[in-house]
Structures are given as structure tokens and as C-alpha cells.
Image 1: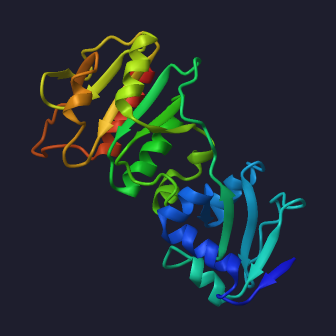
Image 2: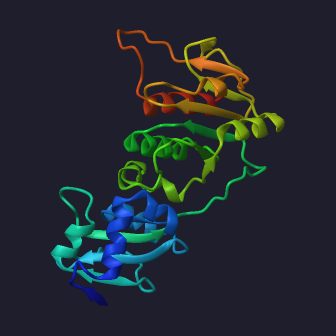
Length: 254
């Protein structure tokens, strides 16, 4: 087992940049996972797994299959350099970002499109919800927060490895979906119908938007129909991740 004790080590500096900067993640197509649950999920994806990093006082679970995994032990100083949480469990995974390409696959029939969502916790929860609801893919439009930031990854709880994430121009994806007869539903208040008053015949795509401004008007003008979730109490709106769960589970069950 290799051991690193200096925070000046080049690999430690790379890990730290992966935690702290989107630029490093985008250029290297790598990211860092932290915590027992996420590392265990990553171990199931050997094509993406690069290195298991453990603090010297941490015992790895006996059921983990680590025979062919590179393990690097680090001291507390190094672990603190790459820890993103305040009470780190002292175990990390250095992984390659799962690559899903930039084009739609012909067998995808149920998709979530995300327009400029800025909160990493919201985005992670939306990815996790799409995974749980059995969606085929998540399409991330420009202006959306980095899906591989530590907070997004933590909120998604391993779903990054389970569902394709595509990044690109949403207007072009909407055109492609409509060309293949997949109905596209936007979310908003203008010219929108109750989300229950739409017919779903298997295939569908739903667009959820920015926490403050919602889905961009140009996208809403391209959809087959726009839907809204009624507010029965005094709240003006729902959290975007909560709205995602309501819509995906409702439409998936139809």
C-alpha cells in the first residue's frame, strides 16, 4: 500500500484542485468522492475507479472488494486537505467522470432536462430522483451548476454511476426529441395547464428550470405543452427538486 504524508505531493495537489475547482474537473474529466457510502458505490464501477484514499486511522469494511484497487494511505494533514465535509469519514475515491457522450440515444424515451439550476444540492437531488424514478437520462443545459462538484455528488448519493448525464444546448435537444415524437413538457405559470391534465403515452421529457427565474422563455415556446403544480397553501412555489419528484413519478406511472 502506497503512503503519502506531504500536502506538497503533486497527487495531493491534484486531488485538492478536483475538490475545489470546476476547471480542474472539466479538464481532467475526473472527480473526488468522499465518505463510505459513495466510495462503496464507486467501487462497483471499476471502469471509472482510479484510487481509493484512506486516512491512516480508518479501517476499510471487510466486505469491500479491493483486491485489484490501488489504495493510498494518507495522514490526517493530507486527508484534511482534500476533505470537503466538516466531519470527514476519512475515506475518498479518485474517479473518472462517467462519460455519456453529447447525443441522445434512440432507446431513450423518458428524459429530464435541467435549465440553469444553480444550487448543487438541488441538482444532486434531481439526478438522484431521476435515477430512482427510472428515467433514461438527464440532460443538463448551459448555466447549470457542475454535476461533479462535491456537494452535487454528495446529494446524488451515487446516482452519477447509474444514469447518463448529457451536457449541451437544451433548445437543440428539444428539437431532437420532438423530431422523434417524444412530447416535451415545460414547467412554468404562463400558458400552463395543471400537471395532472396531460396525457402520457409512455415517452416524455420534462424541463425544470432555475430556482429563481424558472425555465427560459425561449425553451417554453418550443414545448408541446407547459405544466404547473398548483399551490394549495400559502407558499408561492415548490423547491425545484421537490417539483421534479412530483412530476417524474406522476408521469412515469402513467
